[in-house]
Amino acid sequence: MTRARVVLWDFDGPICRLFAGHSAERVAERLVDWLEGRGLHGLLTEPERESLDPHVVLRAVDRRHPGSDLVAELEERLTKEELRAVVSAWPTPYADPLIRTWTAVGARLAVTTNNSPRVASRYLEGRGLMACFAPHLYGRTQDLHLLKPDPHCLKRALNAMGSAPGDALMIGDTPSDFLAASAAGVPFLGYARNERKEKLLRGVGATAVVGSLDVVLKVIRRQG
Image (cartoon, rainbow, N blue to C red; front, side):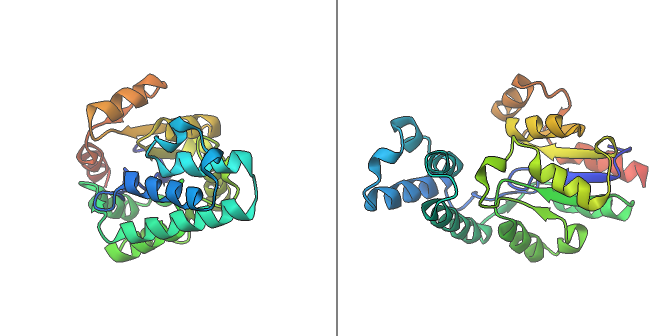
């Protein structure tokens, strides 16, 4: 943490709980309903329909119709749902002061997320945090095969910021975050707000995991 000159933040989890008041499960159901309304019930397998994860639905359609207008429209629908969710998103405890403190001691910050960068931008602007990150927001594009665990968004951030992987740190809360960081050669700090999250992170090999960002904030404040 103290050696990191660049900090790459996943968005939904470490910075906020995006779907705290706008259920991700309901969003997934709406995407499935929209597909079925277009006569595309058979496009998804039963496990994909029942996953209650909007990204599972989006990736599944992209695998079968990569680069299609269907995928583009589905992605835009998900982005609009994410934008609606910003209004009721919950800030992750200690994230705001940690972001400001890390910036104050000279670290450069970026968002590397599977959510739309438009969503991250709207949330950060609402919290008065955009200046800590801008212009380095790297998120979902219509090239859905490049979502994490692919390291594409991390590499974009590193290249834009002129940083070597070893001078950076990624903070994430999912196995795909850890795998993307590993593929990019970036040290990883896991954030796990509950035991289930911690078990998933440690299950893919994450060794540095904290249950609260307060731990990180105390370290960075000592550094300052």
